[in-house]
Length: 111
Image (cartoon, rainbow, N blue to C red; front, side, top):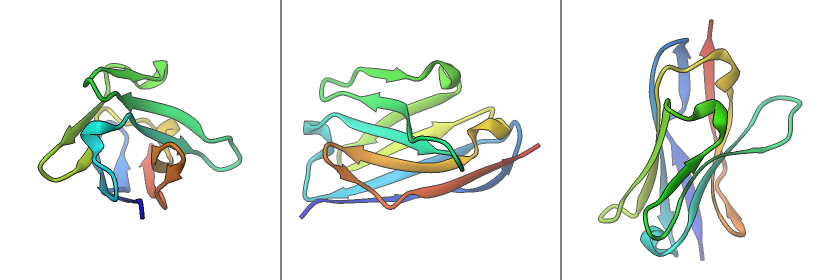
């Protein structure tokens, strides 16, 4: 049974930082492409970042240079380091490995 459990969300002022974690069970994160998505109120869920099996990364344009996706193989956990946060980053952030989704963690950035 695959489970993805996100944590680390919260309320932060603009310009601040947060690190989200996605603890996985039932899969080995280093053997899978792992994603972060987000969904703001009234908007569609959107791609944020990918970490491939080989370790390559890609990001949506609006977060490039501010967000970093990484993994800790020993902890079987994927992270999303978010710096220089903006109010438009406010959303529920989800960890994803096709076809599984976590429950999400709320990130709120105040101006």
